[in-house]
Each structure stands twice: as structure tokens, then as C-alpha cells.
Image (cartoon, rainbow, N blue to C red; front, side):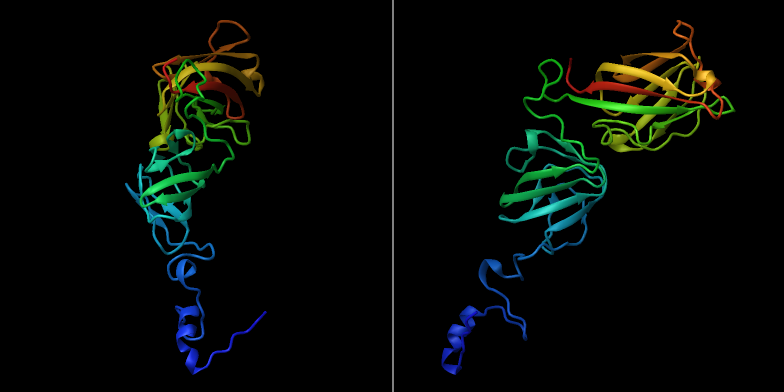
Length: 293
């Protein structure tokens, strides 16, 4: 490494080379000035979600709190920054203001992380999006699953229904079970117990889901915020002698998923509230949401 020595006659040159010097700390000038643009990645303070979302200048990695959706950001040009979302909100795609992968809106989930580049003042492109559950981003132009619509997506849920000695049941996504593209639209919390003609709602916003049972106890309805367009597959498994040889028939009713259970491979209905406290059943449903069919 070379060394440059300065004396009093070189004071002007010294000031040009070592700009922004404070005390004994030397800072590089121009675009590498750490007072204005970051040489290293720094975590800034939390950002409260708003429309537009304001990107602060105290770092380039931020947690976004709150659930206010947005379609634009307030940010200077030529910045690259990363956001981790702490809750559920929707980012609306815009060709220039907020250019998202697949030219499709994104509904976030807690723990999702995205990196953005501002190509101009308040002009932002998302260059990477990673979901907390490891699933990909569905939707976007040219990805139609059903008909000619490009806004439909494939999902796969796996639900467990637990019996109760008081003729009640509760429902929840089965822990550790296979699923696909579901956590952003379905709360993972177990419902409270309910009986015939009863229901319970868990979650809020985009992940709200209501489980309800008919008066006969054999038909369970799952009401999601999003519209269910078509069912592709459904099956049921069970434990305990009381739930042996179950069958299920699924259909879409008013954009909701309805599952009718029957016993012993016959047309006889199976009353879910008749399961004991040690018995449960689980069912899987693959479906398409969005589009018009």
C-alpha cells in the first residue's frame, strides 16, 4: 500500500481527497459518502405501512408494520432496499410506480421478504420476492390455469376436524400436512368449538376464514375471502372406529367450499358431531381461485 504525505502547501489537495472528515474518522466523498448513500447494508427503523409507503433514509433494510395496502412508494432514485413484512397487506402492481413480478398484485404474509430497486424518483421495481413459507408467487399474465383468465391460482388445503364429547367440533389446517399456496389466504389458527348449525371465524383481512356446519352435522362449509372458482380434487382420512370408511363429496357453493361426508361408502350421511373427543378426520382439497371459469 502506498502512502501520501501532505504538508501545509497541499492543504487544498488534502481537502479534495479526504472530504467529510470528522475528527479522526475519514469518509469517502461523492456517491460513496456514508452520510448519504450506504457502503454497507444497514437496518433502518420500522416503516409503518401507508399509501404510498414512505422509504426512510436511515438504512436499506426495513420491517414494514401494519396492514395498510399500497400501490406506490415515496423514495429517491437509485436506491436498492429490502422490506420484510410483519403482516398481511396487498401491493398493487403498476407498470412504473410499483412494478411487481408477473405484473400481478401480491398479498403479503408475515415474514415475507422483498427487494426493490428505485429506477427513478418514486419509480420502483421489485427484483426479488421470497415468501416465508417457501411457496412461489402465483398468478400473472400468461399463467392462466382455468379458461382464458390470467388471475386464477391453484391452491391445496389440508384441514383437520376434531371431535368433542359435547357434540362439538373444531377445525384447523393440519399441522405438518402437505399444502400449497394457501397461507396467504387462510389463517392457520384452530377454530373454537361449534355444533350443528353453528360456525366460527378465525383470522382477519385477507386470511379470514369461516367454518360452518349444517343442521344435520354432515356438511362443512369453508368460507374464504377469495372466491373459489373450481374444485379439482378432494379426499378424506380418519382415525378411530367411529369414523371408519368415510367418503366425502365436495362442491363450490356461492364461491365457498362445501364438503358433504357420508359413512361406509354409502349415501348415509355422517354426523361430524358424533365423533368422540379422541377421534378426528382430515380432508384435502385442491381448488382454483379467481377467474371466471
